[in-house]
Structure formats: structure tokens, C-alpha cells
Image (cartoon, rainbow, N blue to C red; front, side, top):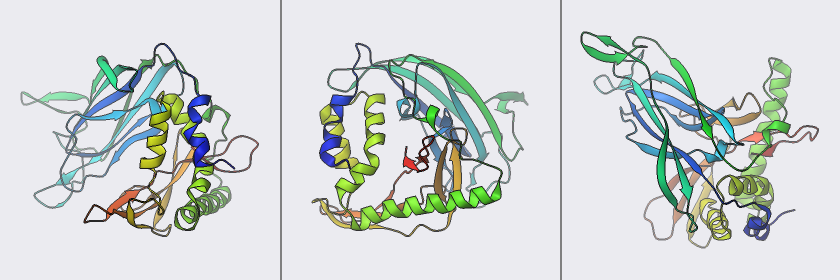
Length: 305
């Protein structure tokens, strides 16, 4: 069993390189719900419920870059929110669009990012109509597109290369998998609610080691992530912590069927969710704990990715 102390010392097990590039995406959107994925893993999923979009928001990508070479970005568009009728549009509109700018940055010794270099600039396709540039998919219920870019990362992560494909057309196997996935979600929820943070560390150790390598974390960054990003009911700065039962979910697959998760039906966010209140805050913060599972070949058990 791994402990929090083992996570604090992960830095000893990862490699550092003379060049440690970070890749990210600036994403701008208008009048659409959308999913954006890299190598089959979600960068952002957005269900438009207000008519708001993104305006050059930055998203790191190294999390799901496993090795040097070609990386695939997938864009999936669905209708956005109509502020006049207060319901979702039935189809995509002339001004529905997504723009994605991929950038590369060097990693400074203090962990900050250096100057950016543009790697790729993508915009959903348009056509000319009445002397205006409008979406070429205007009137469709959905639209999907993809593009690639090259990433020159120095590490190699083979986690998914040696993972089982979980997605199947066999209904009985899918039902059995769903029971297994729900059981794993409940196991992790139970650790949050009744267990120790060391037990949580044991479940997340391999994930934290992978992320530390992909983001070239220092020992300080590893410790800060574990202490701050993983809010736990026994943390001294918390007054309240609770996670809701696993219910009203759908089972979703990513990464060519090798990753499975449970998402809430109403908003497509993680089915492992709840809230916490910090002692210096007046309100409870809603939290959705991202939880992706995979099964290493010949292991027979689901693990956290």
C-alpha cells in the first residue's frame, strides 16, 4: 500500500530532461455545446445552458500526450442555448464556431512556462453566404472534425498501450462492466467519506506518478498538488465535506474504448461529486472529482488512470 509520503517522493522516480516542452490550447467558442478531446481523452466538455462560450481560455495538454509524435484533436459540436427562447437550439447556427490555437512553451527551472510558440491554429470550417462567412454545418444537429499536430515531448508513457479495450457490443459484458465500474466509484467514494488520505494515495499513486512525468513536476509541485488539489474531509482547512451517492449516471468511454467513466446525465460531469466548505469561505463549493478507469492487461482489476 502506498501512502501520502510515497506521493511526496515521486519526484525521485521521474526523469527530467534538458528540454521539457509543455503544450496547451487556447480555445474560443460561440453559440454551441461542444466536446474537445486530445488522443481520445476530454480536454473540455461544455453543455451550453446560458449562451456563454469561451474566450481564449487556456487548457494544458501534456496530461494526455503519451509520447513524441502526432497528436489528434477531436472537435464535436452540438446546438447551443437560445437566449431568446431560453432553450437549446434544435440545430447548429450560422455563428456556431470553435477556434483552437495550439502552443508550445518551454518549462523554466521554477516550473513556470517560458515564451510561447504557435504550433497550429484551427477554426471550424465556414462558407460564404450573402457576403458573410458562416458555419458550413449550419442547420445540422451535430458536427465533428479533427486535426493533428506534432508534439516533441521527451518522455514515453505506455499505460494505455498495455490496457484492455473495455468497450464492447456484448450487452451482458457491458452490464457486468457497469457493475464493476460502479463498485469502483463507490469504493473511492467510501475512501473519501470514511477512509484515510493514505488509502486515497494508494489508489492514485500511479496516476500521480504519470502526471508528474508528463508535467515535469518538481517535488514541491507534487506535494502542492496532493495537498491542495485533492480536497479531503480531514483537511485542516475544511469545515464541511460531502460526496453524493453514485446515481443518475451514464457510462462513457474514451481513448478508443480503453478508458471508462461515469458521467451525470444532466450535465455530463463526473458522477463522483459533492461539495466542501473552507473555513475562510461563506459558501459551499461544488466539486466534481474526475475519475477515469482502465484495466491493465492480465490484471482483471480496474485502476485509476
